[in-house]
Image (cartoon, rainbow, N blue to C red; front, side, top):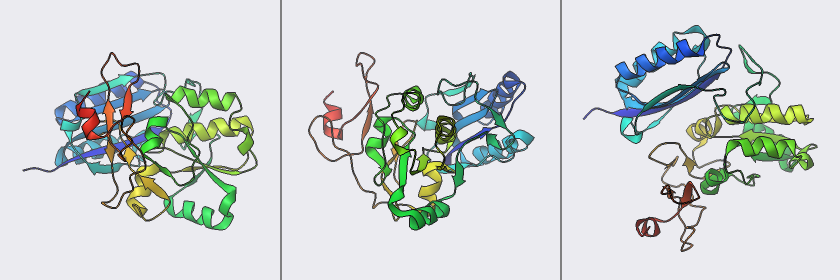
Length: 282
C-alpha cells in the first residue's frame, strides 16, 4: 500500500498575475491526483494539499521551481487526498481573510510585521524575559479550545476577521507594554496579526515562524504547547505524540475530549467540541 502525506505552506510575495498562478496550480495538482485547498491572491499563496507521497513530493518540487515560491516553508503531516472532499484552487482578495486586502508585502513577506522566532528562539525569549512574554493566539476560538500555548490569550473569535476588529477596537491594548508572541497553525495568520499590532502601536511584537506545526515538529509535547492542533480537513485535529494532553471538554456531557465535529447546515454553529458518544447521538 502506497504511503500518503499532507503538506501545508504559504508564501507572502507580490504576484502580478494571480489568475495565471491559479491555473498553473490547478493543472499541476490535478495532474498529480491531489486534493485540498489552494488560495492565490495578489500578495501570495496559501495551500494545504494531500495525496500519494511521491505525487506530493513532485508537487512541492515543481511549486518551488517557481522563483517567488522558492522559499516556501513546507510542513508535512500524516494524511492524504482522502482527508479532503475535493481539490479547490481559487483566487481571492487575501490568502487568509482578515478583511485587509491592502496589506503590503515584498519579497521577504508582510512588511512591518513582528520579529520572526523559530521554536528554539521562542524558548530563548521565554527563558530571558519570563512572565513579561504573553502568547496571543491568532486562530479562532474553537481551535484554541483543543490546543494552545500554556497561558496564552485566546480571543473569542468565530472567524479571522473578528481578530482584526478586536485589534481595531483596542481589546489587546493592555498588552502594549508586554513582549507579545503571536502564533497560529502554520504561521500565515500570525504574520498578518503581528503587522496589525505593530500598526496599532505595539513595539515588542514577535511571531512564531512556521506556527504550531513547526513547533510541534521540534518539541512535540515536551515544551510549551499543550493539547491537539486543529487542522482544516477531515482529520479535524492532529496530535504531536501519544502523550498529548486533552484540555477540552465535551460541550454536552463534560467529558475530556479533543474531538471536533462539523455540524449540520441547520445548526447556527459551524463546529463543536463533542466526545464521540455525544457526536454519535446528533
